[in-house]
Length: 288
Image 1 (tube, one colour):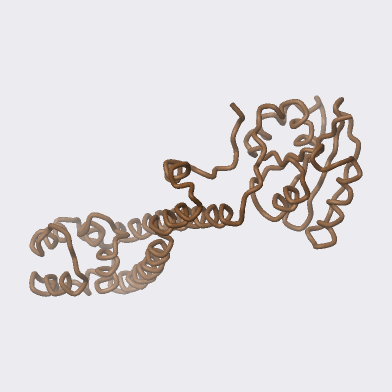
Image 2 (cartoon, helix red, strand yellow):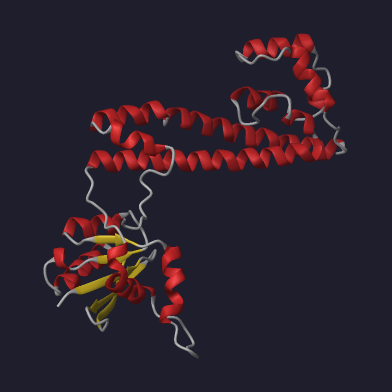
């Protein structure tokens, strides 16, 4: 009889449920996230026959558990947490004090709707490396956006003009400017000559003249912070600018050029390239 497994991933332990073709629970157990616990997971799943005949549903598309199951030969089917959440009412009995365990719901959802989901395919080391590169770069971009928003909000509260001198607050030239002039007082004597020298020092390649940039700075509303508050916030501006500069350096290192080089090495550039910018390697997907 066909069996279906569901694995509820956890940080310290993992809950597993195995159901048969009728939905009856054939096994429930928990294993710790240790070397022995993961070995025990493989042994207990092997009791139900060859791994190729026991698909496993899990809410994550990657990680050590997924790699272990794929290496063992199990079909691994990632099911998005939102899908599991949407089907939860199906398993809730009237008057029940708690929901059915996630491991059981994953297994039973795989039994009833498995044809709607796409199993993962084992990947080569090169593809895994590329996925890690893309995901890490995406994470760094998200951090950059969040920090840039935080920096902009901080400046709007005590020195709005500094956020409007350059087009992007998280550009290298804008961050260098904020590192040199983190407060209104630090820029009090900033004139065309001094700004021109600053722009030349940092190889500014924009089309705005020093006069235009100064006009942007002075056209913004002035802040009302006192000297002590402005000085404290200036230190925060410097800190955020330094962190953002580090992020920009890492993003340059994990640039699209490096990703293209890796794709070329894989010989898959034409297949994968169009998807990189729009969620390629997003693991969840309903089968067409």
